[in-house]
Length: 203
Image 1: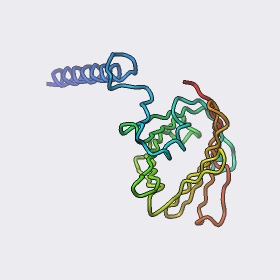
Image 2 (image 1 turned 60 degrees about the horizontal axis):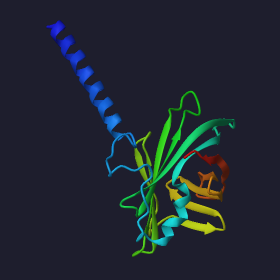
Image 3 (image 1 turned 90 degrees about the vertical axis):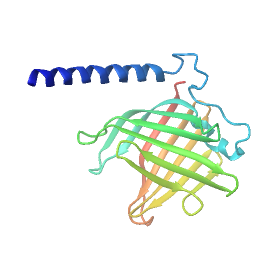
Image 4 (image 1 turned 135 degrees about the horizontal axis):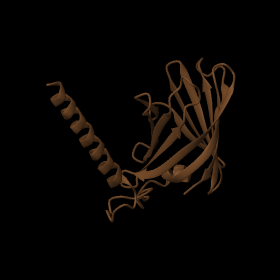
């Protein structure tokens, strides 16, 4: 009976590994002539012009991040940021891949979904923290904001016990910087530059 169970387990493991390999191969951009697959999507010509505010995110970006840890030390890491048009080119999804910044912190993946609601005349920005399994509603008609000053876009958001200001400074089509200011007392005091990333276009 044990031999049978061991054999079934081995067979299941091989089957799962084979399935995952096939799935990864099928999802590799450019691996087939499948017209439904694109590397970065395409902007819908009928999308609100406001969507262009975040168009600089489209592409693959490599960068160096500096994070201020709780003990006051600064951790430096290489990161990857990828932006794509989604929802038939009417929205932008961008993902941040972050390696562990400390021995007790796991690697990190976060995805932001950005869309302008032309009817409601408001931005809708939601953040999916894949690594820690939660969705944060950052900007909508009732909370948060997106402001543009020159070449800097700022996303402000709040949640119980936390407030954040994300600054995206666009230098040119191949370079931009990200800076996060955070507050744990409702905005009375700010930890400015808690996270800073300098990014350069890779693709």
